[in-house]
Image (cartoon, rainbow, N blue to C red; front, side):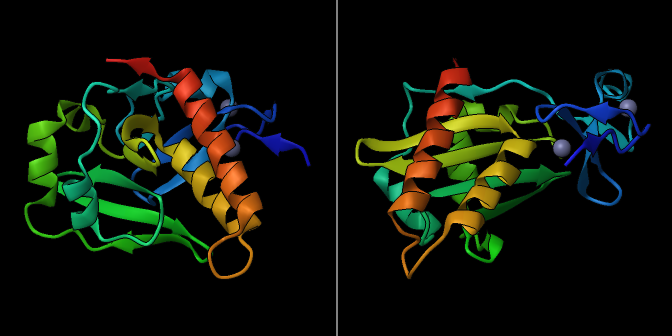
Length: 180
Ligand SMILES: [Zn+2]
Ligand SMILES: [Zn+2]
């Protein structure tokens, strides 16, 4: 399948940048020229390519429990003053209800979560045997995570193959992330 820039029609490679349509709330595939052109646009916003990680401040078990999600990962998007949480499921991105004060607590203890750009960056939490990591990622990475879980999900708990794919994705995120 040949992917094209959804703004100008130029063919793009498998690895390409994205632009968020903040009006229609969707992501558009973009060629390099369009990506750069929309870095400061108001309707179309280039999705930044930075990955940040705060290894010194892992999410506490209590904060994770408050989240009350069945998945091992969850991500948060900010639109204006509103924060919405999602977790990947076989049905796609599922919204998780945030208990009052959850986000406030998180911002006090984890300054990284306030650094995410509205609409185009997300805070991604990942629970592992060693603790829960907190990353700042471009939102297209969240779409990849959701797609990976949905595509490879088997049985009731997702299955070993799905978890292996998700682990690969988080290894990639960790490899790209700059510690803050
Ligand atoms: Zn283009
Ligand atoms: Zn794309």
